[in-house]
Length: 98
Image 1 (cartoon, rainbow, N blue to C red):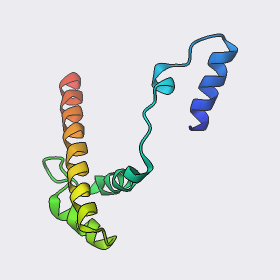
Image 2 (cartoon, rainbow, N blue to C red):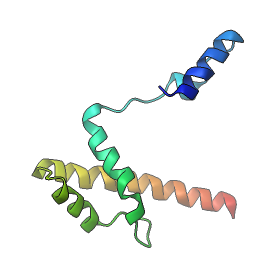
Image 3 (spheres, helix red, strand yellow):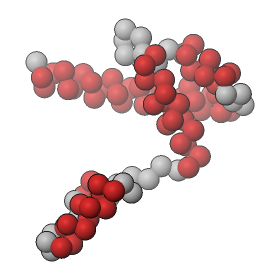
């Protein structure tokens, strides 16, 4: 938990207020999946004109870090799924700002 979140919790308790849901119900990420989330963050700058991280970039990443076959399959799957969510979010944001 970040220092900011800890301060918010402390202030909420001092003011006898509920802890905000976004902190209280914060999702946790399985440590085994951090490998793929880190890759996703690192590869953000390699997006193409469709805002997708290209398959070739994912493969190059897996080769660079000597991923096994199953790790490479998971990398492609997880990054593709995260990209779909990101692209949907980006489209909604653009629509709101139009």
